[in-house]
Image (cartoon, rainbow, N blue to C red):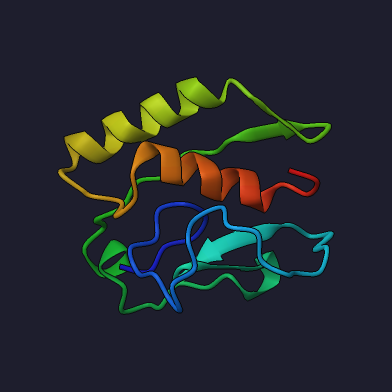
Amino acid sequence: MTSLGWAGEVRVGGTEPGAAEPRPPWPGGAAWVDGRYRPIEEAKISVLDLGVTRLDCTYDVVHVWRGRFYRLDGRLDRFAASMARLRLDPGYSRAEIEAILHGCVPGR
């Protein structure tokens, strides 16, 4: 499954979640897709993705205010519970997911 944000399963080129990598500032936002950061405008999911064709997906939204996450632990708890209920594996540990999220926020 190819996923946006922090629930992707495929790692490309050995990029580790949250690892510093050269990237331009993306005023429209950043996404974690197929194991790397990219501008939100380039974030896409195939219509053949199992999350689309079989509705095998869940998502959550994390809020950022002035460069800081709002209640991140609660959001990660809820996301983990949703994944467990659907018996889905995001392919990353909770710490890796948190690192990916921090990598999506400018100045983090």
